Image 1 (cartoon, rainbow, N blue to C red):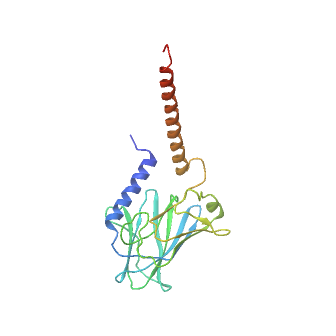
Image 2 (cartoon, rainbow, N blue to C red):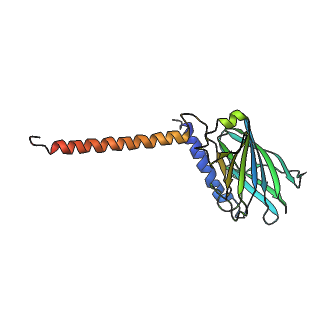
Length: 224
């Protein structure tokens, strides 16, 4: 029997994270601002990656039902030819490898499922945070279609975003996340389902405790 889509998705995410833990280079990586233009059918991302030992080496989580394509890589505003996004061995992540002694600005497009936006990171452990020695706060700025932005549930999205005026949503961090989890408003968001499950468990426990107390109380009455 086929596994439910949610189970397959979770398994794919865990597999991708496991792959990054093995394949991410152990070099410090810092960035400043990431710009994400969110559209109805795609997300366009711009990042500045800082080199280490004469090269920029970064990886990004690879999700099922999603494609990532590089649209450009520049150094001081000049296009760097031949830069590609390539799958890592086993296809569990994407990799960028550029010989450069100066920061490289990459732009790429994410298509398919847009509830998870992978970011390119390098160094240490490619988990939820993977930066070392960030000298300045790290900013994520979401812009794009008003309908796409207004449909986000900021209370359950990660990292914690706040509205920065009309048409923009930002998050200020001290470390680089491996992905953005963008929750949509609605009764079936992951966080709301989790809350309902917890509430159901608490209610079940309360009913069980009440019934047990009632049975013990009735069992102690004379004539019972």
